[in-house]
Length: 199
Image (cartoon, rainbow, N blue to C red; front, top):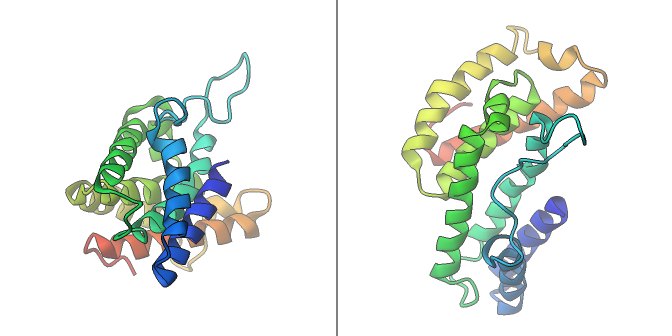
């Protein structure tokens, strides 16, 4: 659901941005309302049970990977700016949801494990923290996180020859190396919005 929802909102945002036809914004608002705003249908702002193993563990750090698609979703939301269908109230409520999700990511057991993850899980954790902080207009948090956490992660993850030791240890190391590098490219792009050049 997260992948499909995020893809659909992103595409609908693009369609509205380039055509200015409200039908695309209206459909995006319908999806966003159902998933994030309407209290009867919305997802709780946590991943307490992501990748759970019944009888063993409620939720695992690997579950944090599931919401990396929200980064694309939020790009789509930005493209709805100016639409009559996407109101200031909608924007405020969505920002509130992501503010609560950001707090969960930074303070929960699963979230704290994500912050410590040395491999691509940690990379995509950082991408989400920075993105959600910027979306909720907490530029101070985004800048502080990049400077104090993300920069250190670069030196932890990359050898001087550019290889990624944590990913090379894993089965399917080529796939994971590419995935991790894509995460870093996204972090560098979003960090520019916080006024920090990681390139």
